Amino acid sequence: MSELSLSLPQSLPIRDEADVIVLGGGPGGLGSAIAAARHGADVLLVEHYGFLGGMATAGEVNPFMPNHLEKESLDTGIFEEWLERMGTYGGQRGSSRTFDPQAARLAAEDLCKEAGVRLLYHHRLAHSEYSDNRINGIVLHSKSGLSAAQAKQYIDSTGDADLAAMSGCEFNFGNDAGDPHVQPMTLCFKLLLDENDISEGKDPGNYLREINDQIQDAYHRAQDEGRTSNPRENVLMFRGVEDKVVHFNSTRIIHKSSVNGEELSEAEIEGRKQLRELIEILRAEVPLFKNSKLYSIAPQIGIRESRRIVGRYTVTLDDYRRGRTYEDGIARVTYPVDIHNPNGTGTYFIKLPQGAWYEIPYRSLIPTNINNMLVACRAVSADHGTHSSLRVMPPVCSIGQAAGTAAAFAVRDNKDVSDIDGSVIRDQLIKDGRNLVTDAPEMTCPNLDDPERAGMEYNHGADRKPKVLTA
Ligand SMILES: Cc1cc2nc3c(=O)[nH]c(=O)nc-3n(C[C@H](O)[C@H](O)[C@H](O)COP(=O)(O)OP(=O)(O)OC[C@H]3O[C@@H](n4cnc5c(N)ncnc54)[C@H](O)[C@@H]3O)c2cc1C
Image 1: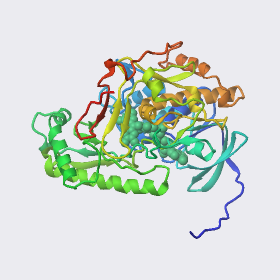
Image 2 (image 1 turned 180 degrees about the vertical axis):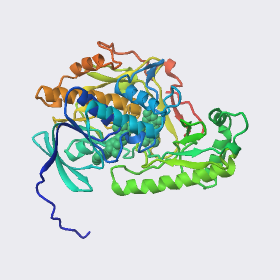
Image 3 (image 1 turned 90 degrees about the vertical axis):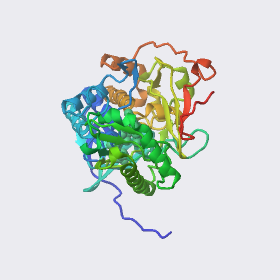
Image 4 (image 1 turned 90 degrees about the horizontal axis):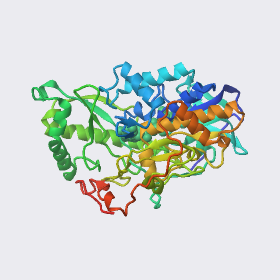
């Protein structure tokens, strides 16, 4: 391969300074930036897009998955405030967790501005300068070219652990059995139903359930006849905020990495190909969609998984199954293991028994080689299985709230985040209204050998029909 010699600058003036720089304004970055600012730090939030929300907005992912014990949210705090604020813009379906991505953008920006977070949009992390286990500064890229920024503490909320990777942190990619492929990407989109296609008196949302077999049969026929390249087992749909809008989380792009620029570009093209195919199938074969219109396509393809850092503690499936708790537990999760098959058809679930949950310890946010950075996004230190549970937006936002609190404490005490005692952060989070418990006993969740658990683990759609696996 021929080479281009470069004349890039060897140094740059430091244009932006802050106590804490948060990279990425998705659910993790929001929780981080707002919490750090509320605890007195001068915070700069750097975001690649011109708006906040990450996958909730740029990826048009919907709805917020429940992370609840009975009706009790485990994500009280900044996440619930965000949702509530969306409601004030009319951006929530009733009291459900279905939301409007436009309202999500506004609500996120409101909360950041009110907390005093400085927002820097349209800037992307390009480089990290690190030595002696500390980040000394970072380089950003924007329309102005390259610029340098410096903070006392950094929070990587890029979802892909970009800052961690650029700072030499160890990470895992793929499953724990050596398969290098991560969960597939999905381009989300919405269709607007035409009034003439809806039978009189029918509520489109409930109606969808009634005609579900018709939709799935049409899709399976198209798969069998080679009219779509989508390997997903079924059409996954949700009601939109508006009655006549149907949200599709249904494309499946496998064997592409979101941290490989060319593959990410290819994934967008494949996602839109599958979208075109699905719309054609639905319009031609399902009367409800005959005259439906394209309502929205997410600005970017949805990324479920990429790098997972190696931190001071790695949360594993064993911890998940046992409902493990920690002195430095900073978030509680009950959402199931939910792995969309990285290699094709099927979605694998392991549900915890009713009322069971596990914790994320503060140590899983701390990389092993850098002291002044936390990773507060889906890329925390966890194995492939547990990642698929904790990655949903509410707990990721709560993880961010813990990271931001810790970063502010580090600045206040003139320490690095790696020296912060996670149990102190947990206590502070409880004071700040997070739904955590002190001295939580380790749970005795029945493990897979327990007959009670039969049917809790299943691979939905491996043969395109729900199938119960016995352990
Ligand atoms: C198709 C799909 C469906 C899903 N379904 C659901 C669901 O129904 N419910 C649910 O709760 N969760 C769902 N999830 C999971 C959830 O959306 C993500 O795991 C979650 O958004 C992760 O949050 P995050 O903050 O870690 O990363 P992200 O939401 O990805 O946010 C990262 C942010 O960082 C910015 N960024 C990235 N790199 C850089 C850089 N180098 N420089 C500057 N900025 C950068 C991005 O622009 C983005 O704003 C789904 C995910 C996908 C992909």
